Length: 602
Image 1: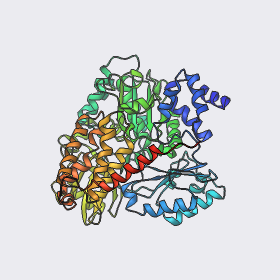
Image 2: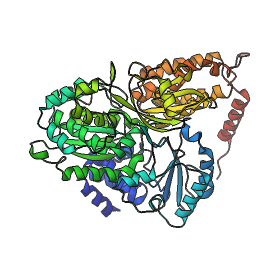
Image 3: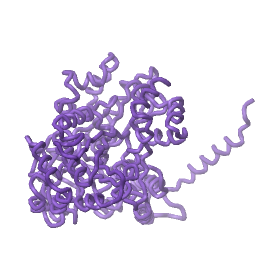
Image 4: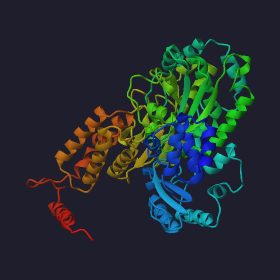
């Protein structure tokens, strides 16, 4: 092991900020990151073992013990549970011979649940050894496991025609997302990137920023900060070196637009990053790609290599003094790394703990230097803005919400997939577009967004002033149990909290337990008041966006569907709450007393 680890360290020049890459190399070779590996890494990188473990233990896909020759991760999402998830779950346990969270006796299979893997339009879905399998049924599971037992690899099963992973056809063979509606911005074919970038490099960087500012585009990652202003502030910030980072950690349940953009229009994204690099005088760019999208990595590397061969990336681009290149940084399974400061920590080889702001990334970002961080969709849109002009883009959409927006539609609709819409259309128009019928509610922007009653669909507008959708558009019809959906969303937040602050770490668990209590019919009116007050405390005192938005499913559903909660309430009788079972408490006390008084064995 020592020689293998030394080889990996040499590959990354023993740079501790590349710890994520180093850990992935070791994990891929040995199937886990053992105590021995931690000790060797700590010595070589001049770190304590605790520092190394802090990173390895944080990420979902890193194991510290053998986790099975074939590691299977089934996406545990609300949409999957609407489409046969439990049958697939049961079949996986039956065929592998192990329960979820364990390995089988031969250590061939390890079964694990994971959060959304960006395939809500084709669930149930799972990852096996970084290879994705979608539209699962019990029969399909049986066939896949049988082939694994027969000695085939996950890649051989998913890619029987041996299509090169560097080709788009490879990805399209694995996932078949439909782009139902395109507009004026995204998925344009046959763009001349050489002509575009050569034209940009003839402009002054301030002219690039001015065009982006004229468009009034706001970041598509969720916060909606004006992109032109962000670039201007970063350009003006003091720093020895500056960086451009593309946030491709698309972890919000129900969102998959960035995956489709990176598949169908990756060079649009790269071109936007190049423009950002030129505008702020950066030489290096990073795409932070969630590990659930590992199957995109070879293809994206090949697309970047084509741009290098065309001298659109690398040194002295098109004979100018401007040099800029991009590398891919793989995540390892952490929703919170969608937060820009948590992403920065991860890029530097640390656990994804969100930083306290200020300072902001444009002041002190990657390696303490000024850094522009934008979403995949934002960079792709910028490449079109600089092609057609800021004023052209500003004329699309409505005041305060210019341009178009990509939606990832899933759930109870006839046509799940990708839609490009102009800001300003109503929720009712979108529901008609996606083929939604008998709709009860829509979850806009994923669990962290807003639950909206379909009764208000004609009044609600897709815009930053109303429904500022970050991409996820989950539809639920009247057959769905709203409270169960809310409970699942709260479970997601308890699993994905980084744990650094008490309101989020503890509060979300309490909210999840309160939802279970309400569903069980053990809640009274005072419990709803407590849920509301606790939710507001968590929102106002949490450190990052995860905690400040995690109570949204409860608060929104209480506002939109109060009658559903009220029908679950019971009348309090006596001094005890209905949820307090004194028989259970006394039984637990007696058992604890027995354990304390039991004589130890000789």
